[in-house]
Image (tube, rainbow, N blue to C red; front, top):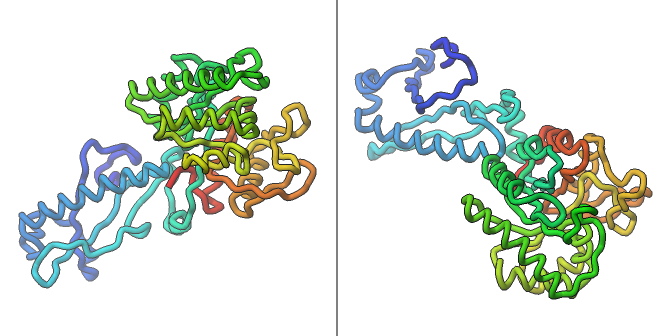
Amino acid sequence: MAQRLGLEEGGKSPVTIIDLCYKKDELGDPLINDHHAVLLGAATYEELQEIYAITRKINEVLIDLFDKIDIILVDFKLEFGKDSTGKIMLADEISPDTCRLWDKHTLKKLDKDRFRRDLGEKYIDINCDLGEGIGNDEAIFPYISSCNIACTYHAGDAHSMIHSIEQALAHKVRIGAHPAYADREGFGRRPMALSLKALREILLHQLALLEGLCHKLGAQLEYVKAHGALYHRLGAEAEEAKVLADVLLTYFPQLAVMGQEGTVLESICKQESIPFIREAFGDRAYTQEGRLLSRSEKGAQLSDPAEVLTQVLQMLNEGQVRSHTGEWISIHADSICLHGDQPHAAEIAAYLHQELPNHGYIVGRS
């Protein structure tokens, strides 16, 4: 249509445009208008209005569906007919053969064979720790599906939390809370000996703060993933994991918990019927025991996007990953974490978003 009317390709029409095509092979399926359709006996004016209403509704549904997987629906074809009683009916499937699709970020045209492969793809959630003052959040948000927002104790402030929520809404990214120990100097990575009462207080305060801002901005807080030293502590200590579970059951029963598979925290959540999101780390090396290799060790953080992709595919396809010493360890994940505080975070996120579809996965949540 753009070529036919001399319009710039890629521009967005402010209105929905519906063209009629008369299905007749020997005539080359010519474009016609409403009056032609009535003249040919194909439909009455009333039936055309019904067809247009159905088409607009399908258009709304498809635009939203494709947008969730970062694809632009350019246009599509529908075939209508009548049943034996004369009732208008949709007489065609909606498939890659009937749609033109572009990549949302690159505006690259997706050919039919490529998209047929994508129909068989699985969704994989990519989460990232954001709102930590690193300065790369806006470059990362387009390429992830879940964000863990710092709640001021290890990083961030009210303004960064609000900005993160707004970015999550703009990019349709799931929001999680990222509470930590009160350790801004150590970025929340230093262990702290807190009483169970004090632990309860810091969890309650951080979750309430973020949930309140989400509510004010029309967003939904969906899960909690602890940060740094608190993350590892809750995964290992039953009494402290129970404190988190009690806070959620008492004040935030709608929230799930994100954490590592096989931890005490996972067991406590299962006992209390709290949804648990198993997390694995795409940009961190593992020990042969299945723990994260200490950041002080050489090679603890993966910075090469291709290397991260290889590790993520091992996790997704084989349910295992090589440790830093070469052993295979079992690992299963509902979500893959990328750390927003590493220098190559945006580059890695963009690379995974681009390359995972070539291996049968789409970044997102089904």
